[in-house]
Image (cartoon, rainbow, N blue to C red; front, side, top):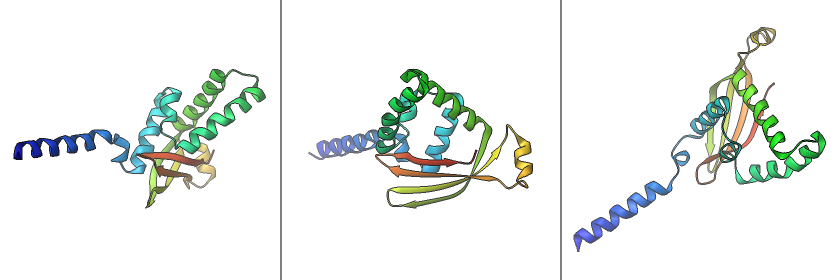
Length: 151
């Protein structure tokens, strides 16, 4: 009897541990920094979407047909252009966490960013780093809800 209870308890513990994805155990800033690294190195669009909240994914999916029409491009071409732009920006912006605030299921991140592709830009701004603001929501793991990047 005790063995059965022990085994059942172990099974529940394993199920609880295995059902959580790794992003639910990480700080929001760590999830965002992992995402940023993957963008720099390139990742499939479906994987990239998985880093975003359900609301942000729906917003992106809603806008793709509009961009297809405006750009006269296919869905795949619009996605490719977006990913190239996103990768280019991520490669050129070195980020350093300045502040992380978690309030319930929301996280507010502020990063100092330095343009490493155009260092003269930093000089023009008197070496003051630009800011990058990120809002994340916990939806069975931390997901990106909004990003503001100074270009």
